[in-house]
Length: 261
Length: 245
View 1 (cartoon, each protein chain N blue to C red):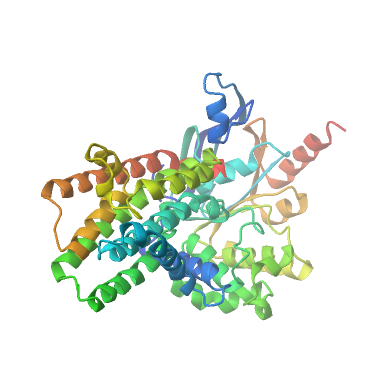
View 2: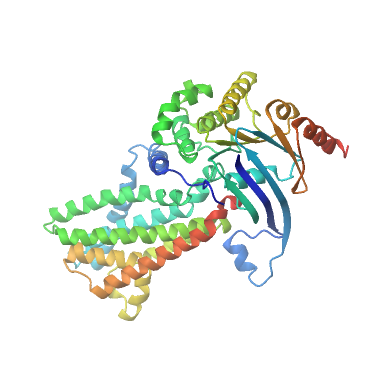
């Protein structure tokens, strides 16, 4: 098919589409509720209050536990929210896919926007929170934290790209993922310290992407330590594999998505 | 000069005898072989569309007209054959369906306009015209879920008519709205045609084909069985649809 390539938008039209998708997603999700956007932050924060009340009796000996917990919860919430919306993103916007050809990945990428906005607000909150407790993270720590978040986002996008096209073929994938997310909450060391798990299992826990992200973020933000170069290489490889696999699968299956709607 | 060349286009849908579209279905039937039935829709379609030409595609229900338009528009992929596009194409397909019911008309117009290739600036500048053309101006900030199907379809035409590139691909044009709206669509269509836009349209309506088109093709059994003047093709089409009666 040569000549004029159908389905490509000019950069102006593509960025306009991306912005409109982000804007309208935000609007439909938060506008109908009283307090709107505040709810998105309130959910993990309420979870924090409940969990701190329960688990501080068990792990309360560590004064850093409450920081570990809130970092874990918000990073987890981002992962759960973004992947759930990413998975259904193509199906949810099927009314656009049927109308005209355009780069469908834009639907998957923008589906993560709401979770990203919440995460950005959390980053400011946690920095203030730590500073107020006399543990203000340095510039280097914040830069590393940002690097982890970029890798985290790439992992989420890789998953979403793959899952969104597979969801059109396997219509119960969202239910399967809901179960996985529920179990995954306990696979990642969110409410418990990783040290209570025998060392020989750590590698397997680190294969679950939220684990390295949460552990590394806690190290740089709370403990003031930097994970080893090997640990960083592991995370980089994990990011590359998940994102790369997602892109490849999406490229293979996306051209025929309209036929599965 | 051709703006669109379609050659040897073929498309077959593989329909599974038993639908498996969940993880559960696949897991339960892991070792049972899947059986498919092939549903050939297009066998071998070849034609050209010249600059400024209006070409009608006629044919019985299920003969593959809509599939053909979707392949030409780039929404479906062909199994074999080639679509050479020498100009930008604006498809107007399945209108009336396909809005986000939770958004108001203005946001929906932004979404649809962007998908059809307009920039935000272009959409913003055309917004008043689009809403006026669809006669939904007073309901611009009403959510689409409260729109009647007629209002929604008129809005879709209004957006698409403002987004037109060189070639317009239309499925069942002028099938919505009252006489006033249809006449406005026809006026707009005439203006586009006069400005040199090529149009490819699917219609069952002999009057539309005879009035608006320079040429018509008749699709039957996945191939083009006739490529002639609108009058002759309409005659053949009517024979075809009334043959079994």
